[in-house]
Image 1 (tube, helix red, strand yellow):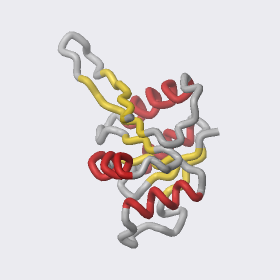
Image 2: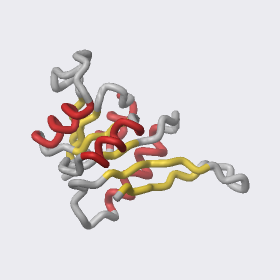
Image 3: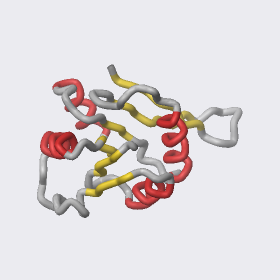
Length: 128
């Protein structure tokens, strides 16, 4: 089972949507690590020690961290977008299709607005 650790900027509505799909999600608030100015390096290290994948909206910092240090339990960066349910549902189906462990991987959910489609399309980009 995939276990997540959401940092402070991750919306609680998205946490709940993940839980609705059966995922184990620990928030920074629940872990007692919120509002303490904990560095992103420490967030990543804590998640690894708990064998949890960091899930965040903090794109720039976590991409930089991944490039410097690939020794982590995994990172998923979601799009700062109000379609929380659609994004989490898309991520859920993507994760179901994965046969490899997410350790050392950075996965990013992006949104592409297609001119001929009424619905925006979410896509996945993996940073190697």
